[in-house]
Length: 550
Ligand code: ADP
Image 1 (cartoon, rainbow, N blue to C red):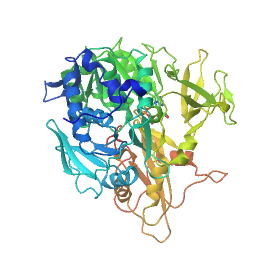
Image 2 (tube, protein in one colour):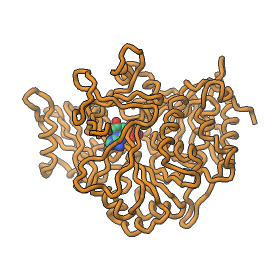
Image 3 (cartoon, helix red, strand yellow):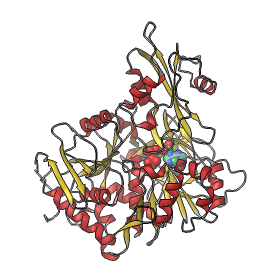
Image 4 (cartoon, rainbow, N blue to C red):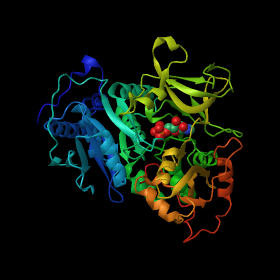
């Protein structure tokens, strides 16, 4: 095996892989990854086993002689192998970019054009083919990495890796119609993990079910929480999260003690399998993130599993997350909104009003500005968006320190705790998936003849929201059917960004100041759809995919 590159961790701080593999020597035989198998079984990879796999993969990646920081597209679900591979990328000085195997081909090509990866990696049974020339391709599995098309060796490593180097890039929805790449350094992600671990959310011996797909940083949070605590991560296959009975079976078979995911993972379970959920005796904790937990569902969860710890985790990809607040058990009567607490140690949330003044009166809304050692480095190849998000510290603009302008509005309570109130822009959460409405609208406007489009979230009767869109086509053009528009969107957008309901209008209603009247559109969407030419749209209530379903 080639000696993996990398400066001694003590030289410049901690790298992602060093931090997460620290337990290999302290508890080599403890479970690190527990994967569900056929019903009634689970496969355990120990810390020692994971460490060996990381070393082998890192050696194989190193032999490719890629330049420091080269991007590696990791198209995979979360498994023991893919966890080992992302740690191996970190160890080999490469930047991993996780993507879903369900990503539409056009979107993957856009990502490749944007991130310019040296290598595309998928599991042995991966189905991606015909990648553009210039990208090396390889497959990975228990036997190691098999190179199919060797990337050009370009090693010119003039220096040792540094903790300020990018560890990974996560692509999220972007307003410009292009996915936005959030670049995180080793230093930032380790600072985040340290802040998170101060909350004592997991212990050695715990088994943390991660329901988030690998391409969202929530799964990296779960991996960090588990491996950083000496616990095991339980990656739940996406196909199983969707089916309540299978989901609960996985939790039972793997002995999961904690389940982490967006609130919508619980909706079907609470509706269809409450008794089976109540019987999961080993389940002691739930951590949710990404959006507010509908309170009736949260109360039901607490009733079914009394005494279970529920943690509300707030934050954004640009800092992985930033606060962890225990939900009172039971939730007091009359609670209208959950506290998101205060930022983790070392970080601070500051509210700023519209005129740029710091707000320090309880109850007065302001936009959350986050000062943190765990901030992203910037958006990949997008200095303008980076400048808009990383702004001078409102508490001391002279210091040169930059903070994250989150776009989230909050108020503070009497004890200094924060309450999330909404967004300042058109970013929404659809079942925990971050969606820029502008990106959906841009795609609809690419449809031949489309002249105007508006997308908006509509509340679902049972909680959560679905995505709807309104489209105007030029007079004289044939009106497309809604399903044609949906298919057109699905060519480039992940499934959770494809509106479940699309209506064709002659014109978009406007407010008195000429803006699209979204309230009027929302009200009209609540009414039955007018007779449309061609086959009727599938009902808008078609289940919007949960986070990462693509
Ligand atoms: P994450 O991966 O941390 O969920 P995303 O970048 O996908 O982050 O989305 C971030 C946005 O999601 C936040 O800016 C905020 O609007 C919303 N959000 C995240 N966590 C919560 C929460 N606990 N409660 C309410 N909204 C949240």
